[in-house]
Amino acid sequence: MNAFPNPELARQWRERIERFDDAGTTIAEFCHAEGYSVASFYQWRRRLRQAACEPAGFIAVEVPDNQELSVVPANIEIELPGGAIVRLNAHGGVSVFEPLLAAVVAATDAAAKEAP
Image (cartoon, rainbow, N blue to C red):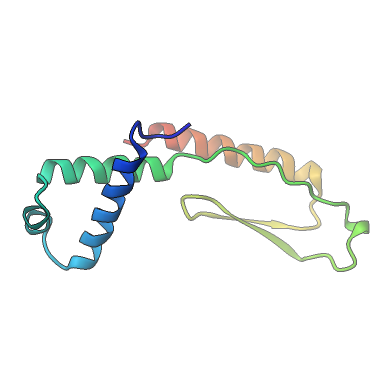
């Protein structure tokens, strides 16, 4: 499900905000030059940031048994959408990974729901 009723308008605002990031001006100056209100700028920036923080959902990953691999990695890194990185010892096994990742997903979901 798309977070915005009008994805084209959201895309336009993403582009505007990217232009602002490169402009080197104040928000008021940028909005005046672009012909948009400062309130609209803040509203769209907030909405786009909130949408970016929403969890994308859980993706199941098959972890093969260590015997199936010719070279076993020492660590597994998972980068979460917010930029956090989960590092796991590859020798932990599914019995360790499954509850740990479930806890990470639950914490991520809870944090997203608490975000302003």
